[in-house]
Length: 93
Image (cartoon, rainbow, N blue to C red):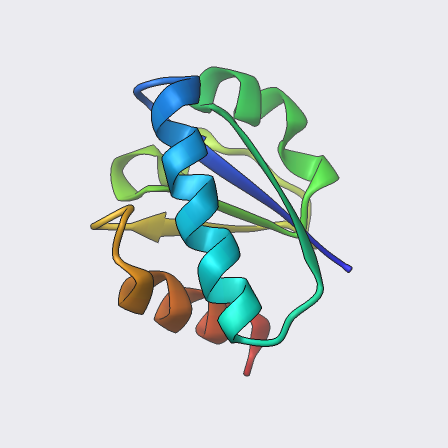
């Protein structure tokens, strides 16, 4: 099962909206997943517990992750097309 974290610099409310977009895309991709959401500050401390972290592009370099965790920077956090494209690329699909 894919463990995904949606992180947003604006806090928990906006990361919840992003989480719902990510869930829709992953369902459409027929993947098994579990998506959590957090503020960027909280996400940085939990990053290595996830397979994928989706965050606004300016925050990508704030994350220090192990080799198994991939941090995906998004230009438009609500774009299903961008989420699908970048997740597919990260997973080699």
